[in-house]
Amino acid sequence: MADVGAQLKHFLSDKVQHFTESVIREMTRQAMLHGAVNLAQGFPDFPAPADIKQAAQEAVARDVNQYAITWGAKNLRNAIARQMKEWQGMAVDPETQITVCCGSTEAMISTLLAVCNKGDEVVIFEPFYENYGPDAILSGARPVFVKLRPPTTADGEWTFDEHELRTAFHHHTKAIILNTPNNPTGKVFTRAELELIRDLCVEFNVLAITDEIYEHIIYDDTQHVSIASLDGMAERTVTINGLSKTYSVTGWRVGWAVAPPPITSAIRKVHDFLTVGAPAPLQEAGAAALGLPSSYYQSLATAYCTRRNRLMPALTEAGFQCFKPRGAYYVMTDISRFGFSDDVTFAKYLVKEIGVAVVPGSSFYHNPGDGARQVRFAFCKRAETLDEAGRRLKKLTLSS
Image (cartoon, rainbow, N blue to C red; front, side):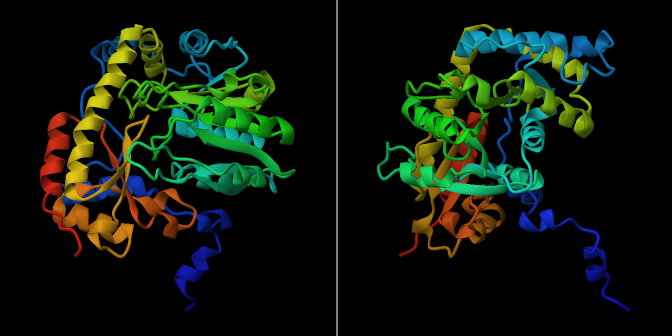
């Protein structure tokens, strides 16, 4: 009898041979299995704002429970356009430039499927959020990676080599994916860096796809700049965002893509046949969320800065070398002092023996060896959770 596994392999797409299931979500499962403190997956363990939860409840009670317009409820699209104008100074037409999706994750894959053809290339900075590489492959494109190099000082920045970035661009390049503030590094790209990327996009006729889901979570007087607001980029940028991180509702799955009308039309076609539409009552709650006062966003950043400053000393005391984030809610760390052979072995030891779940750094790199000395911690947690993690990490010992 023929080997059943080999027989079934005949039915599989070649695309899925090039990536694995999510390591981040696997570490959450491991945290649950071993009763560990989950500092792996980036979801808060504290409540979402009461006002937007009430808005969702009221929408359900009003029977906003059937399909919304496929590309997004009008109230939410209007709110997104209003806030793009207020926060980035960009005029956006809610009727022709906004597509509401099932989270920013779906907005990204819908965008790539809408714009990529076989043989295209997509430039991705690494370490990268783990979806980007597989998304490019699923869309038929080839990902091309450009390294972000870790800081050499405690207060330094992640940097990239201008020549290496330029070399990644050529006539096959369709798009560059930009995530700022960045997951997993916490890097916030500067205006000068964005202008360099802008110049390359214009020179090589490349689309910028920018994931700005952490735009309000920034520290140390850092400024978030949307690349679409730069001269020459409004017509060649897809800006992706969502409710998940800013409003602590990662399970709601409401995100959006903002793009020029012809690109929006293509994204809407793909989105329609992928998911039809995002949850209708949660879109109405999203419109309410986007109407919160500016003080909410200031308090959000301040609270996350406090959490960052609470966790990082505990990590340093335990023996990690921390790379200070300027945005988002993660800390990338170097684990060289613990003497483990690689990041995966170390992460397994942490979750099983120490009781703290992290993400192995290798999951953020095309070549796993490049992240073999790194792990990522998420600090979007209550003070008690961070303190408990710190207590458990004290059990670690350094190599001699």
